[in-house]
Length: 532
Image (cartoon, rainbow, N blue to C red; front, top):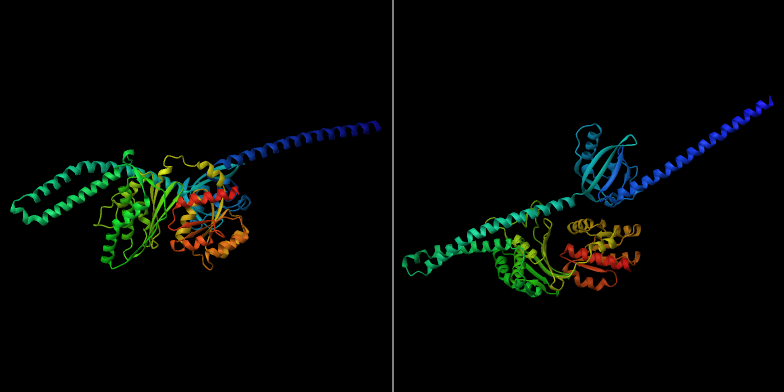
């Protein structure tokens, strides 16, 4: 009996040992599976983070995964988004639309895979995005993969492509018109001149008509000259000379001054013509073309101020380029025609011109390896920037963009600006270049944000409600002595700004603002700050 009991105990012990060994083996397998799963998740996250598009995964409407690009675009940390409803990050103007798409997709109804909607960043900024959505199964449950990118980037590419095709078509048409009409215009002009010189008395009674023919011929020749200017894309090296830009601007001003005075008398209004011409290095080009370019831009600005106002002309040299700014305080350019103002033959002044002025200006700037840029807000005026490469650097290699991106990666900038147009332009441009941008209007909110968050730079406008910009700069420096501060200052405040620059402000951004200039100045300041 005892032997049987002992055998039973041994049998039970062996069974327990076998079960323990089996359990140990299972635990070992589970540990390996867990390790493999963690490695797989790590690899999956690494793959997601390499995607340039913002990417997130939702299940039952909740965010269960998100990549680095999406976090940077929306301004959140991963822990702030996991488990939250996707609609929490959709702007109110798009919520109903996005909700309907999800409902249709879940119900098996038609829903577009690609659509446009607005997200809202953590700081409240609305960003328009192109969104691509796919339904799939994750662990046997329905989930959605959502990829998105800023719509502005696509629209910019589309605008550039359209503009390129427009330019090509206009160039072809202009070349054909010029070659066809010039002989006819020459013939008309020659015959009119011969008739005027004729001694026959019967022609004297047609003197007024001949003057009209000659004027019409002159206008045709001018238009043909403009058309040929649009077709020309480069210069021969033999045509180029060193151009003193400051002198060219003064010559252009002399050229248009008489016309400005006549327009002022006709309209019984006054245009205050103000110049702030800093010394800039020479550019290389054709002086008469550059002078004509500046004169046309000035005349266009005057025509934009039917009730008079201040017309500013200023210059700046930075990053190997000379910048000429022409800023008016007219009515601005309506939003619906902004994309057309550089198109040849487009004009809002019916009967007064053929709409070649600004398009010819843009063509001249491009022929000199420069550009013509226009920033405008309706009812707030327009700023035209003429950008021309300096003679001393036209053959030098540009600094490496890869180096700048590496240095400036993830830089966070706070913009404190009461002017809606300037705040929006700065924010959109800097965001498109990869900076993380926060915006506010008041000085008190700016101070609170600087105390709560870590910023790499603060940009302050000259008209911050409730506090002088230089006082706000000084207070921010007390919070963070090493924080770089840039101030956006109008021409009237430049002298005062220079007086406080050493103590509180690291960079003065003059108005009118040039985006390329601002980007170069800010990147230089950020790199210097990071290096020190």
